[in-house]
Amino acid sequence: MRILFLGDIVGHIGIAAVSDVLPLLRKRYAPDFVIANGENATRGRGLSERDYKSIIACGVDCITLGNHYHDRQEIDDYIDSVPNLIRPLNLVGYDKGQGSIIFDVNGYEVQVTNVMGKAYIKNEVSDPIDAFSALLEEKRSDIHIVDLHAESTSEKQMFGYYFDSIVTSVIGTHTHVQTNDAFIMDGGTSFISDVGYCGAFPSLIGFEPQSVIDRIVHNRGKMVIDEDAKKLVCGVVIDIDEESGLTTSIASFKYLEGKEWGNGQSRH
Image (cartoon, rainbow, N blue to C red):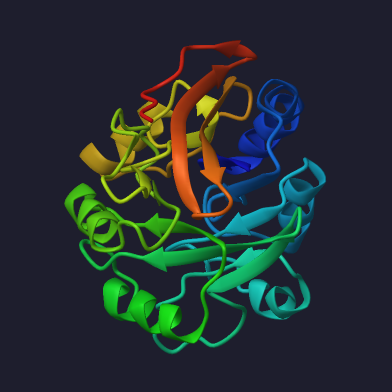
């Protein structure tokens, strides 16, 4: 089985980038299932129902979230009515939606779980390892992909090593900078610290660079998204042995306006 995971979609330009490039990715990689993180899709913060529908219309099968999951409060009105939108599993005090969903893909159970880290994250969450361990006691599936939405690379790596051989893949999201460490751990679980983002290029985490500098350095103005910039799509392709549920290969990629920059590491 082959799964395609796309990095955090930032703004409407990110949705447009996925819409433009996903048909090319499907033609080249022929994935059985496509996952994307959508927590920044609506003007960089949150996910409106309209933008949720737009991402699904692009051909994405499943959308995960993160620390901006509730920035668009309308999510309360629709998250329980859609079958493929996953919010962080370990939120404290929020019970709408699901933190883990099992999909039937070619007769196999593919479970997708969204977990949020604790380090440098303002949201109130329970310990990610404890929360995920409790989930595994309740239900397990043939194939299990984890979107670990966290700031700290070491926290992400610790989670990956802790659950090596237990889950199929741990994919880091949130920092929007694709890391060059895609690999398969000794137990067969694939890992990358951060898959990157889909949106405007050049940018700082998806936003127009000068607006970020003005906001952070000079404490003025707002961070804005350049919706007229070039489009960038980052992601990983994961090949999986259906019988063991473990990874046989993982490769990262970047596409800029349809031009591939080159594959990242792939280890077998």
